[in-house]
Image 1: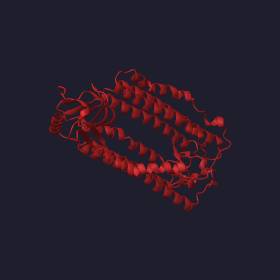
Image 2 (image 1 turned 90 degrees about the vertical axis):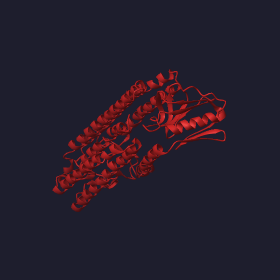
Image 3 (image 1 turned 180 degrees about the vertical axis):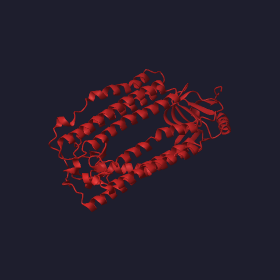
Image 4 (image 1 turned 135 degrees about the vertical axis):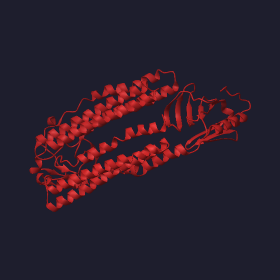
Length: 470
C-alpha cells in the first residue's frame, strides 16, 4: 500500500472520533435529568430565554470547532511519508478532543453563574449522597447471565488452537498473540459488565418509578454493549487468522470492526440519553436532586463523602472516577500525562524511527547493526550463512513496525526461523545473516549501493564462509 493509501485508511479510522465527540458534546445542551451542560436547573429555569441562549451558543461553538478540525485533516493528505501523517494525526486527535472539554467547562461556568444569580436552588441541593430507598431491587433490572460472555471468549481462542497445530514457529507465535489479545478483550467485557450493578442507582427526584426506569435503561444498554463488543472481538480474531495473508481484507475487517463497535456503543449511549431526557421531563417542577457542587466544571466528580471510586456519569451510560479517592487522582493524573506529554512524544518517536538512518559496521570480529532502538551484535565466528536477496520472501508481522518505508521487529518470513528484520521494503536489496544458534537477521542500509557495499565487506570478513547463491 502506498503512503497516500495508508494515510487515507488512517483518516477513515480516526475521523469518526470527531463527529462522535461533537454529537455527544452538543447533546449535552439538551436537558436530561434536569441537567444542561453539566448544570442542574429547575423546570422554570430550563425554559428561561437566557439559559436557552447559552445552550444554543454552546452548540454553535461545538459544531464550529467540528468543521475547523475537519478542514485541519487536509494537510495530513499532503505529507510525503506515512510516519509524518501518523504523527500529525496524533496531534490532531489531541486538538480535536481537548478543546471540546474546555468549551464545555466554559459554558458550564456561565450557566452556574446565572443559576447563582437567580437563586435557582433545589431543596435537595447539598445532599451528601442522594439515594432512593423506595426503589425495590427487582425494579432496577436483573444482571445478564455471565455465561453469555463465555461463547465469544471460546471463539476468540480458536486461533490459539489452530496456531498450536501449525508446524511453523512464527505462525504459532502469531496465532497465540492474536488469540490471547482478543480473548483478553472478551475477558475485559466480562469484567466491566458487572461494574454497573455496583454503582448507585439513578436518582432524579422522589419518584421511585422514574428513578428505577432510568436505572433499568442504563443497565440494560450497558450489558448489551459489552456483549456486542465481546462477539465483535471474537469474530475479528477469527477473521484475522483466516485472512492473515491479505492486507486488503485485514484492512476491511478492521474498518468493519470499528464501525460495528461504534454502532453498538452509540446506539446504546443515545438510547440512554433519550430516556434521560424524556422520563424526568417534569421532575424539575417539584423536588429534584442537585449535585452540582460535586462536579468540577460539570465534568469531574469529586466527593470525599462518597465511598465509591467508580461512579456513573451524570448523563449517558458511561462511567467516571471519583477524584476524591486516591485511585481517581492517580488515574486522572496518568491520563493527563498521556495526553499532554505522551501523545506529543509518541508523534516525535514515530518520526524519529522513520528518519533515523540504519547503519552497520564490522569491528573487533563482530557485526554491528543499529537503527534507533533495534540493535544486532553478532560475532563473525557465529555466522553460519549469509545471503544477499533482491526480493524479500513473503513476510507477516508478529510484533513491531510495518510501514511503506520501514519494517522492523519480529516477523514471520517464509523459509526462515527466529527472524528479526529492520529494512526499507521498497529498496529491493536485503542482507540475510543466519547464526549457529538458529537466529535470522534481515536488514538493509539506506540505499541499495550501501547495502551491496556492506555485503561485500561482510564477505571479505568471512573468508572461509561460502555464501548461499542469490
